[in-house]
Image (tube, rainbow, N blue to C red; front, side, top):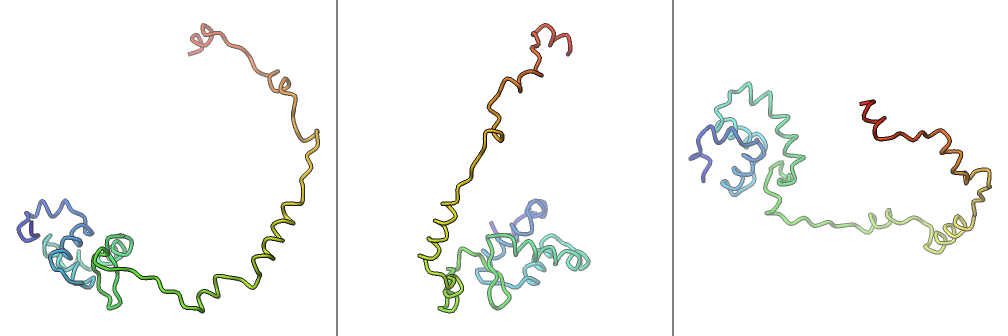
Length: 147
């Protein structure tokens, strides 16, 4: 169903981002933030004050919604229409690796693992009976009386 054929009550139920998705699907081409939000305001019959007061929040909602992608020309489109390629330059690759070789890193890890930790008997509480001394056994009848 086209947005222009929908009743105002139906449109008001939808979020701004849901309306944005419908607008971009109908329009079939990317649009800038102001144009999309102006279209929403016109559909919902919102005034210029509502437009000015809410466009910042609207922009934030677009940036956090994974359905949309911001294009280089400051326009928005549906993410599903775009393929995202991640390209790393050779300079970027160098940043991922430090000067240390894998062998040096392995040697450091072996040294860390070889350091043993000694636990003495004083540090380990093997006597569970001391923990049980302060416990009291309560019958079901006594429990029901307390409630």
